[in-house]
Image 1 (cartoon, rainbow, N blue to C red):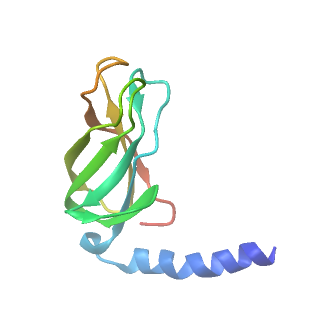
Image 2 (cartoon, rainbow, N blue to C red):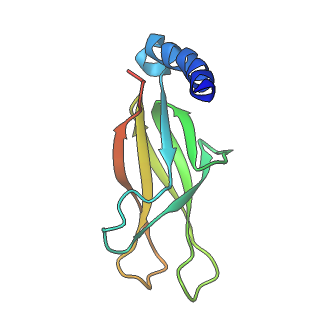
Length: 125
């Protein structure tokens, strides 16, 4: 019980700050986690850069607005590594984007960065 109260205490200032920011200053999130495993030839990606700056983590917080993101695909069986791709994205505030790799077939080295899913961020309005 104490732990959830402590966590809530840390989250409340962020949520309040998010709600009080103007639209252009509100955050968004981007992740390379797989959004839908049912879609054929779709896989997760790893976020490398946002606007040319290196980033780390499975979920990266970014500012809304036009952003250039660079991703790395996961390697396919029988090949050493995945390929890097850039994606220009008009990022909406308070939105989480799942950016995935879409291949034409399971053996294709080439892939396209696609928005697998976008959803509202909890507590951000």
